Image 1 (cartoon, one colour):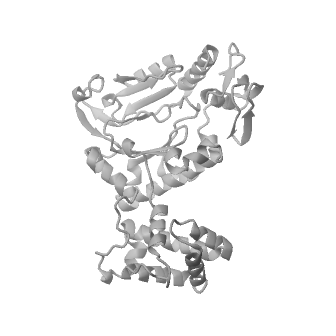
Image 2 (spheres, one colour):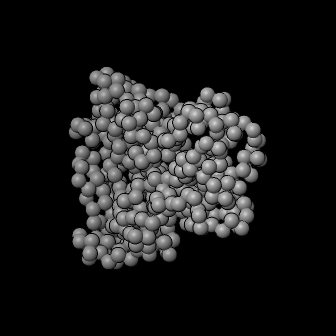
Image 3 (spheres, rainbow, N blue to C red):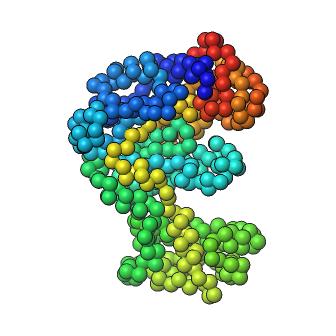
Length: 396
């Protein structure tokens, strides 16, 4: 990133911080803060602020590329040595990033667009909400969802009893979400509990039941060839077994499938269909219902996380805080765009790249110049695929 581009981006970020309504984390004066300036890779950290006005002034004057604060609260947050900070607790943080959810090869080869990638991660975020509310009993009011400004979402659980959890307990939460070590046969379950427990009970019993039911219903709705192909994608399921499953499903309607799945789970029967080892399908249902948050982020009780309402230095998008109810309607490339789509700036492309933003497709070609709306130009410059051509121009 050349000097003129850095200067332009700092000016743009400063203009945002002068007009934006910045939200402060709870107990912000007890948190460690960290910043990464434009053109610098090293983080400046172990900062502390006494007031929200002091933070806002710092951001307006310095316009860093990235703004972080600690998930933990400390007695002495500015102490340079972690042992001297005086840990008092930490929010429970989940980081849902495309790298952990989507096949990395698809991302590297550009086989999935940025907007589609974000849609996939949003689905996983909604799945996490179901875990937190239904399985852990956390009130939605104690949960804040934050679009990371780049490739995913952060989820903050801010509750006093949660803050006391140490690394081991947080790692166990990740294990639960990812179904690590789960015995999907449930041999210890009392068969007398009744099938209603599978339909409406909590925890993984309900999730496996719903996963199997949804999977078999989907198979039933497909034409024969597509259904066989879908089943054969499950590791260990061959064509003959897949055809037997399809034939078995064809004999039942949706209600019959539901009753059959509940009965099979209560009996702990793995060979539900003659000649088919259905444990493979059951394990597949578990994989569909499980999730993989970034484990080190959740288990780390000293983690630095992005400040909601700040800007992400690799996209120029807002690190956007959301309530649980706002997640469904949230569109990152509409609602987290910080800069104007009406004013333009000229850039020179360093690499080919494209993005859909504010309902329009924008693209740059290697070595070519282009006149782009400021929002798209900032995005491409932050991504490192374009440089400013007319840095002296006063775009704000």
